[in-house]
Image (cartoon, rainbow over the protein chains, first blue to last red):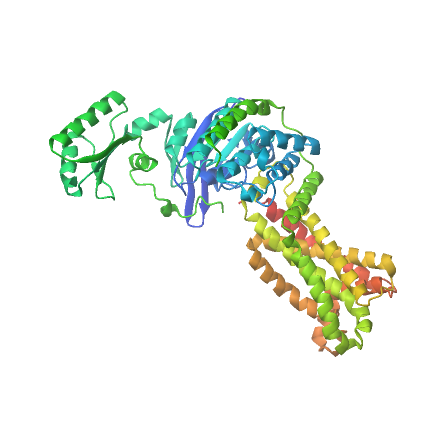
Length: 333
Length: 282
């Protein structure tokens, strides 16, 4: 690995699609060897940023260096050392899994024999040997994504871009992909991962940047962000909808944070903005429950969850995450 | 989905194998432009193998053109079909290949809108390789179309005076001309990125010069302005050259030279344009 600087260093990246500023001044520093999470809703600018860093798109403003090379003038050197996997950079559905890997191996400069050997190895390692001879179009979502990631490892990259690796996956496939990402990172590859899921960023990324409307609205470790977002959300589900205003009054009198009414007339929620201290949160919630039962509010269900991305956005940006507002800025146009 | 047991063993396999895989060596040397183009050509062949219906155009068009034109126009214009075939069959070869070229453009337009296109563009290979590779695939398709026209022609009574060498030379010339048009459709495909629009543009561009040529009739009965067009129309020159080569009626080889010049000119304009459009970043 040449150079000791950061894996990615971007300053003031701007990308404009017609009327939309898909990226509106993105600054990003990713250390070598780090798993960096890029968290945001659809249309926030995640994919556009990756496309620029992977030299597939040109920024309209700002500069970026990837592995020490300038994205504008040294694209070839960057392409030799990075791999891109995700929503937009995918596989050939008509070809079999094996053929896809052999074609990509040849294009990566491996000999015919080496490409075949590597394809076999990767298919075995990703538990896809049984489906190697089937066209990829017929693969399940989880198999497709595993092969997709495998295709990025034909030559071990110094930097791997993973664009929403688990979007639309069932939980089991998701945890398989997470395990893969951990192993890839453990072997020394820097990973830039975009995701819509707070949990995914939390589990995988050492450093997280939250992006919204083409701007980075918060950055830090998972713990730092949670401290800013709050310690969690208390969801209460009632047995009787007539009691909701009573429950609301009780919770408002007990907790300092504003009480939100759910779309379901039986639900209420409170985003606990107090700094993360589990013991403190527990006491607070216990206290609120006692008050509710004293007021004879019949409760069907109480959960204390991590803030959802929606809530995190509300807390970090002051507005709900609204994909519609930015249109197709994030689409693979 | 898999059973829990299968998943557990799979998870262990992943953990086990991935370490060795990731430790494997440094990056190989960059794939050369030719090797990469050949790989893309191979990919085109693989796609045909998995989806043989892709060949519908290169099979149907030559068959329909040859049979239809011979029996519809043949008797009316040239007496017996056998007589007319001598002039018509080489023209049908030109027309068939020319029409088939559009489909390659439509396929490229489909290709560039899929995710795999972005994956290819993220690789450290010469960016023209995909376009060149798809052209290599086109050579195979044109060869198939040409073979169908010639074999069908011979079945229904055509006898090439130029023998095998004449037929081979004619087919080579027509394929070269077809490839120059492929570049034109590649440019169209990269600009509009929609297979249906590529096809409609292709038809609008190809239909007039195909009929306003000397493929079906000699231009003696046409108005003066149209005769002038027929004379400069490259399709007329290619049709003339093909007739000369296949029937061995060539004298000075003028039409062959003009065809090669037209082929080179179209290629020189549209090939660099296509490569530029392909490697351009968004």
